Image 1 (cartoon, rainbow, N blue to C red):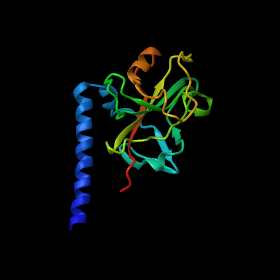
Image 2: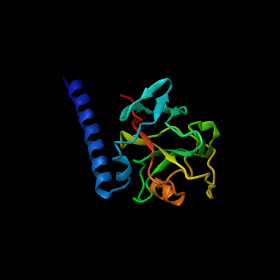
Image 3: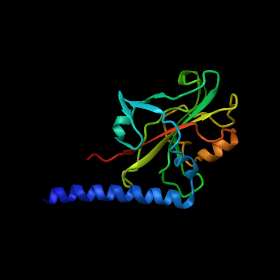
Image 4: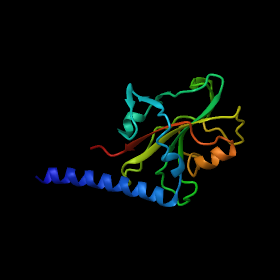
Length: 190
């Protein structure tokens, strides 16, 4: 009986954590305009042969390797892909994201043609905070982007934090995303 109660308690804590995170995001409006875009096509994401759906729960060890990514694209257009952690701990509420992967100048939907700004880094949710939200965003570019920021080719976390996808999109004239996907990840084992 106590085992069932503790499992149930953990599930309730996870649900409450997610609820309050969603409420806090809605409260301050950060990325609400994008996150609420339910009309956007989903990005096809596959980790270790497993296709994920919106709000899929994945343990962090299932995301260690770069996923296969597919999205609807015009073959002559260029795109930007961002994988970001919206629940990264930061005292700066305007630049709270941690980038886990950013590729710009993707021709059509062929990621191999793009320029990596940030190499893929596996999601690493804070074990104290529990489940964390990870968003994939794809933007259609108006042309080729010339980044004026250092390229992060290592998988270290240095230089990835205190980011803001809204500001990045404004800076490079990207408008709103054309597709997105979100999954949740946790460090602790069940």
